[in-house]
Image 1 (cartoon, protein in one colour):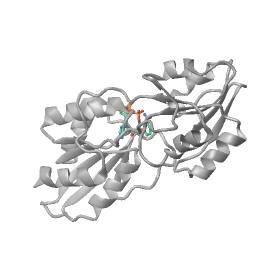
Image 2 (tube, rainbow, N blue to C red):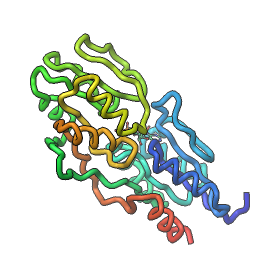
Image 3 (tube, rainbow, N blue to C red):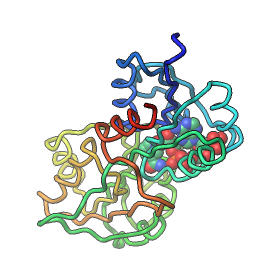
Image 4 (spheres, rainbow, N blue to C red):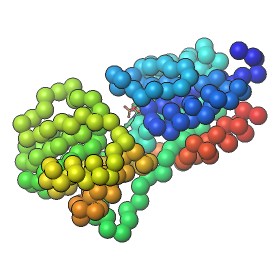
Length: 249
Ligand code: NAP
């Protein structure tokens, strides 16, 4: 590898991270390592070098950047993945390696939407009306408070099964985005869903459930993103590419 090649660590697990790795890998000036948390047994394919599993906190991440001679970190993790972002920012500040955060914009409520805004998962679980049939799309790691509500019917959609027993009043649907609007609408109708629970993840891949709920006049319990210490540097891949170019010039 020529010495002028800059080594970039992408903290991934999102569609944007995959797209970014694809673009950067085509550019001879960069070598990319994408890091995945290792939670998904069969993750989507990523271009370039991949490593998987936690680093062992900030110290471990700093050690990794030193060993791999990383010139720049791009934190392109999910808007709800707060710990790894905090670790990345901390590692960047302590090593002097620039750390840029790429975070897609949140969804905004539109005409015809009926959202109840929640700031955390437990409050969202409590907000489901007694006896209601809910489609819960918060991921397997955070589904427990919904399963604990024995007075509602839960259809929980996730990529991989939960690590604990599914109660009788709940059903797990394993599926990986993107989902078409037609399919989302058909699911809501077939399962006679009365309320949708979603994180405000943003992006296109899962927005169709919001559109389907709007079309059917269904309420949405929308969980707001966690607060972050500072705003993201970029909200799309094009924007972060130009920032990377400027940072490494
Ligand atoms: P988190 O709570 O912010 O992070 C917990 C720990 O997991 C981190 O301290 C780190 O362990 C490890 N970790 C997380 N992301 C990593 C990465 N990309 N590479 C290496 N280690 C990572 O994270 P999370 O919310 O569980 O999310 C885990 C992964 O799933 C992220 O890559 C995220 O982009 C993706 N994801 C999350 C959500 C969500 O709703 N939270 C949704 C879709 C995708 P160490 O401290 O040992 O380094």
